[in-house]
Length: 304
Image 1 (cartoon, rainbow, N blue to C red):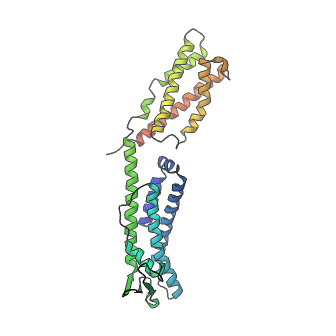
Image 2 (image 1 turned 60 degrees about the vertical axis):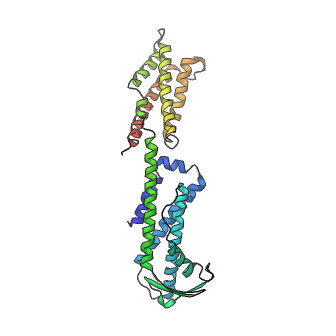
């Protein structure tokens, strides 16, 4: 894969990270702008790469087609790269090669009405894959000979520089975000959490005085830890962009019914046997949450 295309692929990987993509999707207009710009930057690069592989042609019409196409590719790609910066909220620090844009405007973009009130003509017999010449008539006469391989190289240097800067900015922002949240999510769930579920089970099955109240207390502890984990994920912008919201939907009703049993039994909609199943189900799901917490902690372990 050519270097600009490889960098575009790396940039897409950064953008498509779950948290980043979720954030960008909150603004549909900018998201669509970004997708359009990424496609345009990639499409124009493939077209430029194809030009380099084109054999020399004796067909005049084909020569014009390739020349007009190449010069318009350059400006379309520059505009696409600028749009990527805008969509991502960054300011570009790399200077646009305006000489490429000027050549495109004068030779094939607006040759009949250049801004300085001059007029341009391509010398048909000069067109080849590597060079062409055009004349500019205005306040003075200019003969301009253009080296196309040099323009291609200059454009690729510009494209590579922008893409590398964008990738580094995204990586730096991600690292900075993770530095803010170095508290371990795994620490939310104590080692005694399995014991809590045992006490909830006893509160459901044992009839002696005190067991039900003790079960209620430990269910509240379980509920508080589950809620604390969700709040911590939201602070990191990790909850709404993940499948965890579906896990929380799954345990929502079982938790509700267990809480009702211990606080207002007449409102509980299921029998004790079902509540025991619910307790085991939540216990299993909490083990999954603990595993996910460990995985996120590993992701947030910032390497200096």
